[in-house]
Length: 190
Image 1: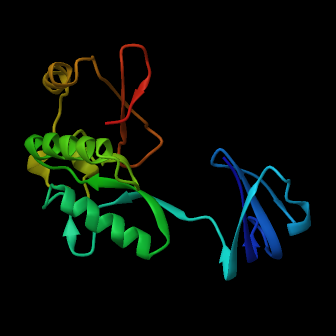
Image 2: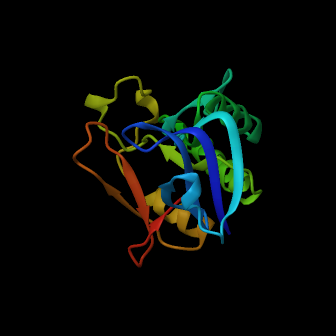
């Protein structure tokens, strides 16, 4: 679908430009043009008295509107976080769980999968902090939940998700961040 959104001002990444139209083709921005340059194939929608700017994406948020996902591992917490993000100009977010009991992580993975599968918008995935982090650099993470090995967890995930999951760390981060990969080296978004 080809659409043109007109506003009093549009932020182009550097400046607020007046009286412009934002062109979208199949959900992708293809240009910012004057209203007289809108191609005839584009449907037009006016937003008088408004300005257009990109939204933010929060890639590490623990919850919102009084709901911490690690403490209330349910879709209501995700709804509350989505509403909190939207109110602040954030269109998408990555819910985060700090180092926790493995049962809490597993529940969080399942709740996030169900939430995304339900078609609700905004949630990009789950950011798990730990439990495989350095005890010396644990910061606020509870030491009792920090794990030294991952072999038994990989087997548990293999049986649960039907594929072998590799865990790779990125040593450039002070707190180790892990990403999960299939046996074909394709990243798995849990």
